[in-house]
Length: 239
Image 1: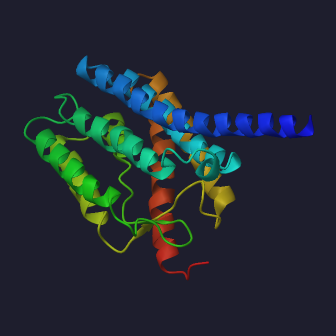
Image 2 (image 1 turned 180 degrees about the vertical axis):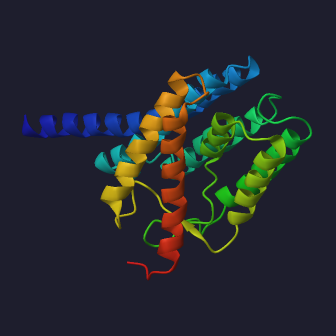
């Protein structure tokens, strides 16, 4: 009886482990829904789907470690699956948004989209993408966030293109950006700023991507913190 119970527990654990893979793969389906919203010109809906995908991406890693996915669900490579899904939601769908005339007029959107997809494909294959203490080396290709700011702040096409090209170059320079969940240093403050960003982003979505001054201030403050933190980290020894 004890052995049977142990076997059932093991099967249940494996089912949960494979369930985490399914949860990760769900991000690709959410990206597809976001792309459909881009096609019909509903950018608010598209960002909502990308936001849900962002939440899934935030929780699947801890769940994978909690349920020992590497040992209990070996058929699928969780890290590879995560990269595939991230490329869809972080790169491909945001790049498609840049082709919308209300986001970036031609030919700026096409130029930006080509730069984003080409550079990100190389970045995702970089074996040195993260430092030993889990900081990202170079700009971490979170184009869903960049394009969110482009739309929310309604920047001129030339300025948006300049921002995107600068971020593209930063992907390959010796700068670092914080992983807000896995980096331990300053984690409390980082998570607080992440919460502030989440509130400001949710308010922006609620306002149909036309945020008021308070939402813009929250978004700007959070962006300044995350960019500035990398500059501070670059001047300090790793721990």
